[in-house]
Image 1: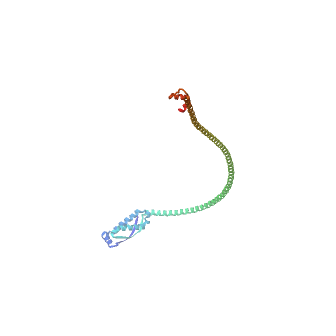
Image 2: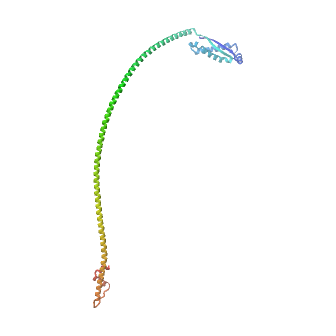
Amino acid sequence: MVNVDLSLTFRIGPDIDAARNFVYRLGAGRLNDLLCSVTEESIRGLVYSVTHDKVNDLREDFALGMLSTLNQKTAQYGIQIMNVKITEVILPRELWQRLERTTAFKTKLDEQEKTHENRVKQLNDSHFTTIQTIEKENARAVQNIKAAQKRFEIQRRENEDKASGDARVKEVTAASNADVAMRAALGNEKASMTMARQSAEAILKKVEVDCHKMKVDAQQKARVDVKESQAQLKVSESNAEAMLAKAEAEELGAKELAEKRKYDLEWTRIDVLKKFAEKEGRKLFITGSKGQGIMQDLVPASKSFTT
């Protein structure tokens, strides 16, 4: 059981209404009972809310909390709590001894922790010193490695420069050889192209000459054929004109000859008739178709002129 000694400071008021409430609602006879009940309840709540090892450490916080709680419960009776102070906290003997042992153990534990911290610090210092030594050795080793790396880089660059120079020389030599071969190939190609072009030109010239000759021969033959055709045409035209002239002459001669023959026949017929007429003795007169038939027999050519 925990015993807590508590000191309260209060007043009735602060105004006349609060004093009236105190007198008529509570009174002086029940004041102690009210304060005892509310303080015991508050103390009980404190003890139940914290562990036994923290009771002594919460006096100030408990006083402030109890001041607020008591004012809430006593304000309706016209009582105002001004101050609350916990003067003493008494624990049971067994609990007190246990707390004392616990405190001693904590003290020893604190000492052990300090000793351990000191040992850890010493170890850390030793470890730090060792690390510094190792870091220095590593730094020297890294420096040596970097120096070797730098020498290797220099050697590598020299080798690369030498290899690059050799490669450049080989590249230039190969380029020169390739250029010479290319020029030779171009020369051979040009010579071949020139020879091929000359051969083609010669063949083309020969073909052109042959074609021109054939063309000239064909044109000459065509002109000869045209001339011969024109001559034959002119001969044919001349022959046709001669034939036409002959035909026209014959036609004109035939007409004149027919007239002449007709004229001669007429004269012959007239002579025959005259002879018949000059004969002495009996005169014979034959007329009609018989007379005409006799005249035709006498002058046979008259048939073609009368028809």
